[in-house]
Length: 353
Length: 218
Ligand SMILES: Nc1ncnc2c1ncn2[C@@H]1O[C@H](COP(=O)(O)OP(=O)(O)OP(=O)(O)O)[C@@H](O)[C@H]1O
Ligand SMILES: [Mg+2]
Image 1: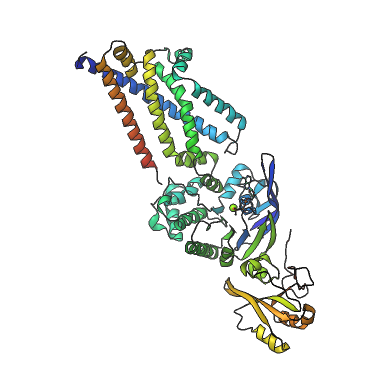
Image 2 (image 1 turned 90 degrees about the vertical axis):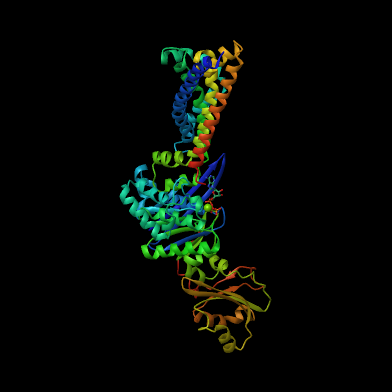
């Protein structure tokens, strides 16, 4: 639905050059919620603004629903933009118009006749649960309600694609949850494809099907959330299951095991200990619910160097678990060693550009 | 001078002052808004960036604003005469009044437009709004409280200028003040004119404030 190829955007201000987006490739499939995660200044907003050409890319292609946007003329681009909804961190509502007036605005822009406009506005307000506040001004409603207005407005032109730039960053946790819920619901009910930008892991966890992690204008990791979590060494997993840097002791092997399901049906730690008659030390762990399934990560310590534990590690992999071995004193510290042959994620595309 | 002698003069003077103020306000509102919009549109990063045009317009505004009203009024007498056929009287005074107020108001318009949240403009662009729609439906509409507040300031400045215009043949309360209050030492007349001018300014300011309050939904 959205295809971004070799996208580059450079800002030039008084002799200084900032490459905000540096050769990004992304594909957002129809009907999915795609998150772009990254720190402040990573280039997320710039990337998003290049999708509907609020910023003109310096190089690369942006295809939305098969249409090459940078190639369009002014009028064509305006018409194409009406098919792409966008919601904003600070809402971007007209303070001089009521809630209903704000939702009517894109319809006016499109030249929808007055009577039809009123009908559609009522429908949209109903959809986001704001019928009672139709006549209120933005200054009179809460942040969460403002974002609902923003969402209703973005949907006015029946877009297939919704772009969201930190739509929940200005909201408290409960309101964030309700807005994410609404987006999820719209995604399911209307088949809306959503490309959202966030710096919160929680947003990815709650609604994203796929994710790309951006740093310094580049995508360092991307793919379906579930796959990335199961992929040893993935940044997403490290962010979602924050385990401290392992303390490596000579003569032991520290392993991060990622499992799916509630873990109870796979008592792999006790099985391992029993099968090989070893003491398995649990160093830490976390479980998260992602898209209806639970994914957990456990850090365990096995006696003996990794080569001594070959059978044990193979056992874990055979049980369908993703295994990440931390280097011991002999290896480069901190560099996780993965075994490509049995790594369940290696056959997936892992664009590290 | 008796009260009965003063009243018709004051009535006439007030009418002339109002006439000068109302007409020049009208032309200023149009011209100043246009110029202010152009200043914002053409600036670097604006909706229609043409830095060269922006520089020229900015320079014109600055020159206009640096000329004292009385000097401008005398300097453009040939222009005024060409435009309205005479250089004295109420009608003639409207020309320099408008010309001096346009740059003043244009700067106020520029400031008011700049205060419009750029996020709202970006949102409108993302919706596919055209430049004209953004100017009318977003910029001018969102800036309305600021535009009206600026216009109030401008009207009050125009009332002041119109008194000066009166001093050199424009009629109005300023003319009365010079002829009776200053040259003939009619203290009563002077006082009455002062009271009228103060009342006029108060009324304009109150109406302006009221309008701004009505237009603000913050
Ligand atoms: N209009 C601009 N002019 C110059 N530099 C810009 C402009 N917009 C963004 N940048 C620069 O581009 C880089 C990426 O900015 P961008 O806003 O895309 O980051 P971001 O990931 O959205 O950050 P945040 O989470 O803070 O919103 C930053 O270094 C920023 O300073
Ligand atoms: Mg941003």
